[in-house]
Length: 249
Image (cartoon, rainbow, N blue to C red; front, side, top):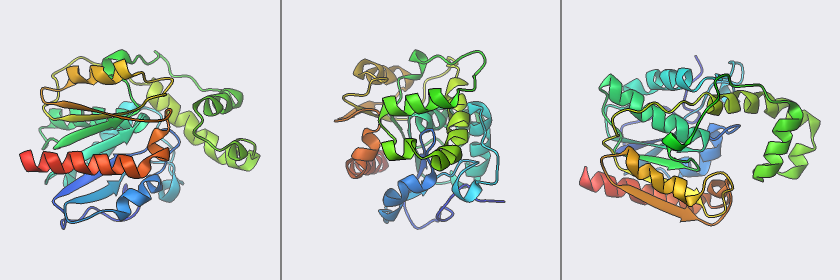
């Protein structure tokens, strides 16, 4: 069975494991530079979702809650020691719902949840029946978000490869339903772009209502894909917040 971890299975050498989830259309190798920065404190473990890279032969999973259940099973043997969860956009949805799922299972909670490019969950609303978008709609959305190079959007072969995964991933985000429940008992770091057209600062501040612990807002210049344009800076802040959590754990 293909691994949920592209580079290597999480080891036991570092003090904490950082599981990273990709945004819609993203892949685990998008966190390669973070993984290369693993050290004695933090081991970065990018999570590979079905239907991409080493798991390309598998069908993508278009439902958020099925994906979270599968991820929880895959991570079950790797949350026996301190860990943190990071995700951007769709990845943040997965990380948030995974935190709640693991809490219901009675598993060890993360030392910190780090969400990026996502409004507070109670401000989001899915659709009763996630729909398939047309090719034209997907391309128009990619152009609006400025996260995909224009030459890729004009290459039909690349689009033929990329669009089915994006179709499934956007169905994942549209399947999200906020379900009121106990607040998380873990600190949350919230990352956002100052010019993100879909996630205003007020939506980031609203994360405070979803934890009994502290919430830290991290703003960086840029639109929805600030996480790519400032990858090294985001990694610095993520590592710093996790190390701080370790000290107080």
